[in-house]
Length: 346
Image (cartoon, rainbow, N blue to C red; front, side, top):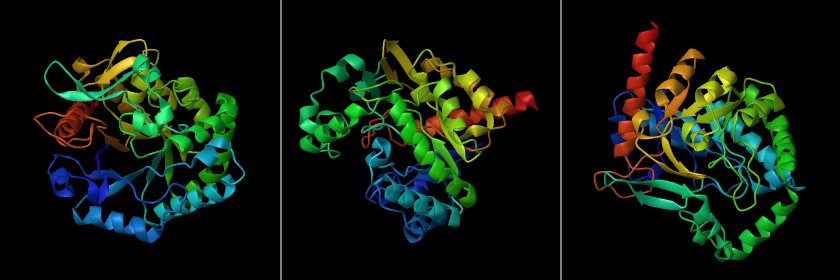
């Protein structure tokens, strides 16, 4: 596998020089965060990002992500133009030989938490989710009412978008995802880019919006929509592991070579639709990462793997979930597991 680390570009307080000092890390997961959603990504802009990463003697292993415009998810008349823009962005990736594109198809909200700084017994803080706390959030204030979403939608815009989704149930969202994939997967094939959908986080409906990429059955349906090696999955142990019903090692073995990217982190389930993130080792949470990585090894996974979210430890401040220290510990832990599993199987 390719040990990798998320970097948010020039605005990230963590410099590439510090990431390079993490033993074993060679891959960077990044994106063009200032391009408006729906606009095509130019080869020049993406090339500048790639060159900046390569100047630090690292490689751009994954684009995470090129956002899918809500008009595509809603199936609105203007989606064909937006899909053409998406295809142009994939073509730019191919020209630059950037191999993996992580994306998601979550309506309105990306990953969602109700607490960005839950204090754990050891004094560190972590991201947390509680369905009861979510139910108490007043979206008439816009996304400013949600932790981490202060600038996304103003109240009127959010209410209009939520109203538009009232006619979109899970099956219609599946139809719109199929329409999208039927057009972008052939472009990805030609460009040499592997698409890797991220599971919904958390893996259940929120605010009455459908969420469809939630379990083994959904992931298998996803890869069957367009049966191509270019149509694959980001296997996120934190997202999928938030549901006790998901057998993660079994899911890995069923998906096999369609896993193109791995997010490996841990969560502790503390109640019905309630969890918080933890340190990465299997003893800290509800996810047995030893068994997950063993399954990934068994199916021949050789793609990028990143530690995903981490706690905030040692007094570090900054973007919640994306401090340097705990994620650095996480990626070295994952490499240690991988080495042990590889030696066991040699």
